[in-house]
Image 1 (cartoon, rainbow, N blue to C red):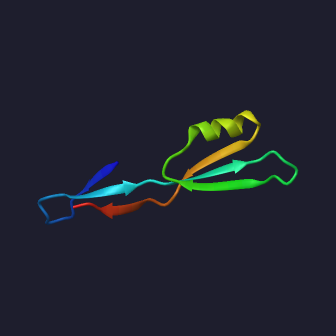
Image 2: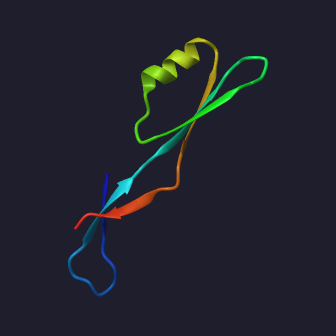
Length: 71
């Protein structure tokens, strides 16, 4: 995803890449109620589906979004 940023007084926009990352929480249905946390830029939906099929819960949250200048 790309975002154009144009501060006041500048005629040409500066381009920034928006780096989106996620925290994926895999909550196991075991006696200890274990939690596995994965930080990633891509969500592996095959992995998510695998955990859901065995009765686990999944929470997917966006992390703080960083901006990287690309001009």
